[in-house]
Every structure is written in C-alpha cells, then in structure tokens.
Length: 135
Image 1 (cartoon, helix red, strand yellow):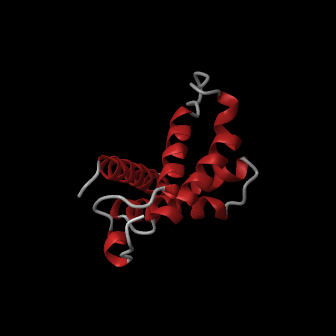
Image 2: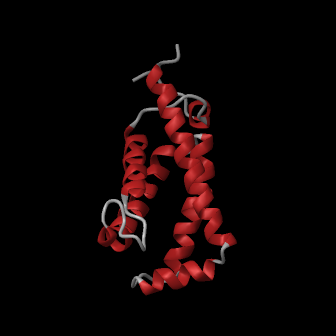
C-alpha cells in the first residue's frame, strides 16, 4: 500500500533531481570555463567546477530516476553546504540586492538531508534493483 510519506518523498526526490540537473546543464551550456573561473576566484581548484557540474548533471538524472538517491543526496548536501558558506552566507538569508541569498540553497540542503536519511520513495529504480524487506 502506498503511503503519503512515500508520495511526498517522491515529489521531493524528483524536484531535487530536476533542479540539480538543470543547474548542471546550465554550467556546461553557459561555458564551463566561466564556472571554472568563478570557482578559482573563490580559492577552489578549477577542477572542482567540473566535479560539481557533473555531480549536478548526472546526479540530477539519477535522483529523478531513483538511482543511488541516498549517496547522491549526500553529495548534493556537500555541494550546497560549500556554496552557502563560500558564496551565499555573506549576502544573507534573502540576499543583498546584488546576489541572491542562501534561502533556496538551504531549502535544497534540507531536502537533500531528508532524502539521504529516508528509506525509499515511490517509483524509484532502486526499489526494483535492490528489493528489501519493509523497515
């Protein structure tokens, strides 16, 4: 029997995955070199931009499909925590007029943590590939 929390978890999983996929795609479409330059301006190695873009792009698709959701959600939460601390925190919760605040990043962080700690969701391929007893 399908429970309400499985439906909500599925909605959150698909939303989070789609959001990260779109952001990863934008990094490549907008020129990954621009993202590399931005990361380097923050004192991060340029290769980190490729890692983040790939985590967002491939991880986003995987999370939408429900493949490796827990592991990828942990990676998403790390990306978001670094983004909040290194970039957004100085702008404040709602931003400062020049830069967006960290409210969206924090919401996505909380969703990521929730998905990393949740058993399973409806319509996830992990449910088919890794069948387990109900917890």
